[in-house]
Length: 208
Image (cartoon, rainbow, N blue to C red; front, side):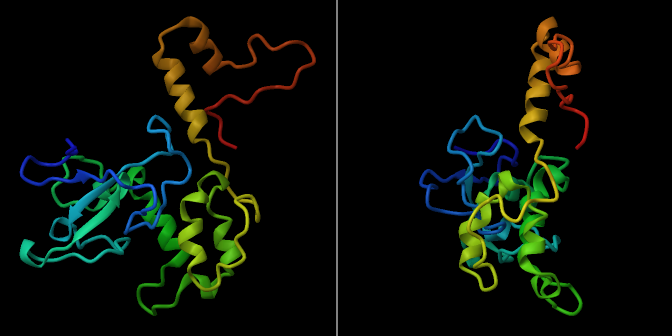
């Protein structure tokens, strides 16, 4: 299957055997959800290294100058769009596509000038707290193979600084797009039909 967000002359083919594989750029494993309809699911794409942009500091895979020297890479949906030279996606440098690369760089990257690794300046457990608990399973297996990350035993400790609202936002948009009065009112005012004495429900679009 070819991704339609790429030009007709450059292809990225979906990898069928992805259960035990990870993205070679952001090192995510597809372990959060195996349901293709889930907002946490991603495909892995086979991409040639000569199609990879060299401009991003968040790139961890090698790029080559021509097809003769190119190697085949496996990239997740987000990294494929973020790094591919010939994507038709106009906002491919936005947070929507760069966040996996950013988080992996935060956990394992280094300062550009001195080369000092972030995990030697800050305790790895502190850096881990910047990753929402719902997303940690993506990287757990890759991190456990590295020094200083042996402390990871669960996805809930230490607690994250952030709450992941991905599912809430997805449900909000689905309710609005349903064009039904009941779901629209529920999305905008979830306390509309709240019973007396029951706890208040926080609207989905209000930040934590």
